Amino acid sequence: MLEDRKPDRGFVEIDGEECKGCGLCVEACVPRVLRLAESLNRYGYHPAVYDGHGCNGCGLCFFVCPEPGAIRVFKLAAPERGARPEAALAAV
Amino acid sequence: MPEYQVLHEKARSFYPRYTRKAEAQHQTHYCPGCGHGVTHKLIARAIDELGIQDRVVLISPVGCSVFAYYYLDVGNVQVAHGRAPAAATAVKRSRPDSIVISYQGDGDLAAIGSAEILHAANRGEPVTVFFINNAIYGMTGGQMAPTTLIGQKSTTSPFGRSIWNEGYPLHVCEVLAALEAPVYLERVALGNSKQVMAAAKAVRRAIENQVRGLGFSLVEILSPCPTIWKKNPVEAQRWVREEMAKVYPLGVFRDRTKEAEPRPAPAPPPALGDLPRILEIGDGAGEALPPLPKDPFADHRIKIAGFGGQGVLMLGEVLAEAGLAAGLEVSWLPSYGPEMRSGTSNCHVRLSTRAIDSPLVAHPTLLLALNEPSLRKFSATVEPGGWILYNGDQLPADCARQDVHVAAIPFTRLADRVGDARAGNMVMLGALLEITGLLPEAHIDYALRRKVKSERWLELDRRALAAGREAARQGVTHAS
Image (cartoon, rainbow over all chains, first blue to last red; front, side, top):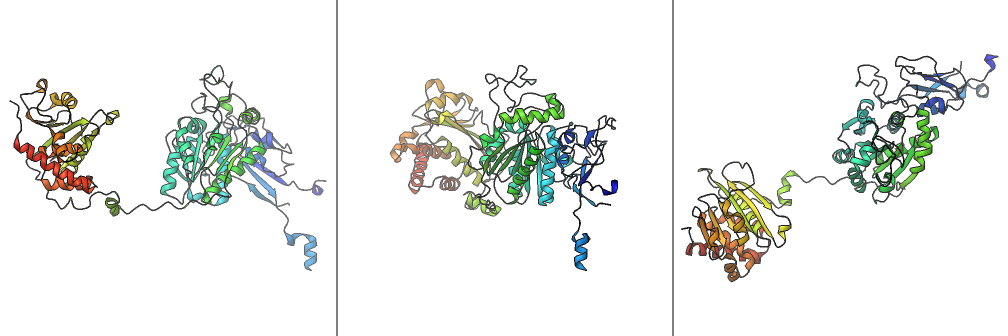
């Protein structure tokens, strides 16, 4: 059941046109959810792509990537105190 | 729907677009897998975190990273090969509040710039240096660097680097750690994600040290160059980790950040108006003297020659000082080397009513020869109609000339009678003034007071001058 699955702790966005396909992010990715695309980008590189799920938001891919803005890493926001059901109950 | 927030993205200290190229302005010019890009990111991130973007001045080197100023949105100076630490010194000293980051590769820092980095470190310049060591000359196509590993092939070490031919890999951190001044020296690597994270910390620390006002910080970064190493980026990363780090051990080589005191602010420069007093020039007494007329045109080209110790240079200085006080154009050019020690020395003095083209006096109008070797060396060069003043009873027969005036006077012997043979130069000056009327007495006396600090010598020199004038009045031997 998709709805029951715990959300991923993070995800990444890769700019396939800035990426030069060096593969260092693929090498660094702990959950191994990055790979190089079969297709080529405008500059003739196989850009890195994210499988779409399984990212743990560690950010290592960002640090090993030589391009300033090819990767953006998102992290699951910590739920706010007030949003937690038990906290809401306690308030009542 | 779960909420996500941005954890890592392009640092604010990067420009949004890199305008060097007409296209692909969102991409760096670095090869895939290059360590420069990673290092740029670590630096940009540290600048963001420390909130110092407006204070940073990046010194870009020569090498692949020459275009660093197209990427990092900070102050920039791009400098000559190897000179980044010297330029960084200048920027930091003239703008002490700036955060100066010098960025250099190994060909730049460890080869042509080895003197600059050594002395900047030794002076403890409070700047931050990032040293990219990839064991090769990358930009120029793979020549051997000082950091190339033993056995490593390059276009200039095609059989592999040999210790007998090219010497050992240069360990920059270890060399600098032998100096007293550096505050922080660390070697990191970009060999895998763990090493990159450690590098990020070191990069930030090195910049933070400067923000805290501490001294010299350098981080050496073992960095992949996949293209020139002919490896794919992943193999290149492994080579950094497994081969380079073996030769260049990672770690902190110096950390005095705890005990280091913030450097005191540089002393403010003295006010311009105070300089003459500090340098003991232009006390005003000379300005009170009447200037000589600029007309008619006069151009005295004087050569003074003798043994070292006879006061040759001093005699020239007194003439030049007096000339300055008289409002003339003046030059004084000493010529000495090993000659200063029991050899001949000479100086060239020009006193002119017009701007002087060259301080060199090849054909003097006045030759003051304090000994025979000097006379022999220069007598033939004197302009026809000029004067030779010679320290002796008469000119040696083979030095005689028909077309010049000669005054042969035993100046040293006269000085001996005055009280010290070393005042022979002043006896000669007295004679010169008497014969030529070159400069007024008052100007000469002013120059003497400026040059001679001892009262005893001042008095002796004045008597020597008078003795020279007297001797000149009594008998000048003209050329027949």
